[in-house]
Image (cartoon, rainbow, N blue to C red; front, side, top):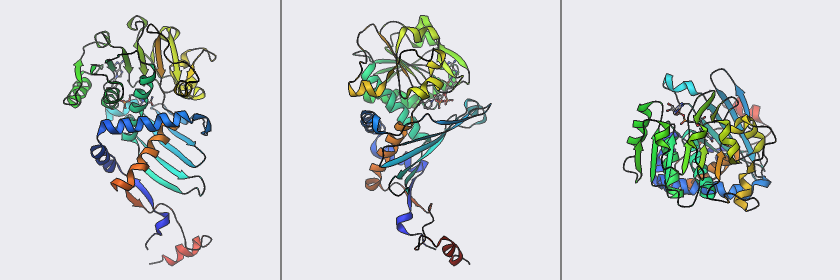
Length: 347
Ligand code: NAD
């Protein structure tokens, strides 16, 4: 039986996503995503917002991240399992959906493992564009796993970073990252220690995966004036920064009710002063105010960034045709005759 056209849902597979990146170009795509994310941060107040719904286990977490702007609804399914890589599996995998609020019908389903890496990197760089010190051209990239090349190239495409200094406890991860970044126009410097990696860097990115209160940066590693892009601490009991660093930093977050539970600031008092990023982006709150200030983006990843990424993706599909039509919704000619439709399908 042929499904009715109006019920077909465009589905962007992993293969389509990879083709799309090569069609648009990675850096233009990161810039496009950053623009969509920034535009949605500017209209932050009109979104439905709630902390993501997390189901924790000993091995990791599975999360649902919903939001809506009143016209379009979106959600992402995402997991975080730091021990997966030892089994040959990804730490983070994801897929997501957009739906029309007026009818409730899904309008896009997509892989989001790759799209999450892109949107996380685009968000980091968009935020760094607002908070990093003027003239920042060198980033320390600590944690050289799945996200690391995307983080590095977004900082190049959006913030004019020209040098990345890599460190990972696993030298093979650093070698992989350096190999992948070769030929992309960045000066790539593999380092043997985190202390070496931060030398001369104005942007410090931590992007490690470990389900514990880890100390990737100690207090004495963080000098005045740097911008910290803390990506990996994104779950209760999973952080990357020594608490003393947080006390010396001005801290910027996505959605406080989620970040208080999941971010670096879970280590602080619940009323510790933080600034919401959307307010910096709209000009309602100051961002960086001095060259000596330490700014910290306590990133956990918020539903609106995924919504923006899916919105960007949807806007590319007509031109590229990079999707399948998925027979996802039962849609009988007579809406009340669902049973009849099943019966007529008898072999
Ligand atoms: P990954 O497992 O592919 O890579 C993590 C890397 O960190 C590994 O290479 C590992 O060897 C390294 N590492 C672990 N402990 C370290 C230490 N003490 N010092 C240096 N390196 C260390 O994971 P990934 O997909 O790249 O994700 C990295 C982290 O980012 C995860 O914790 C993930 O949950 C988080 N994440 C956050 C967001 C967000 O929006 N904030 C989005 C995606 C992923």
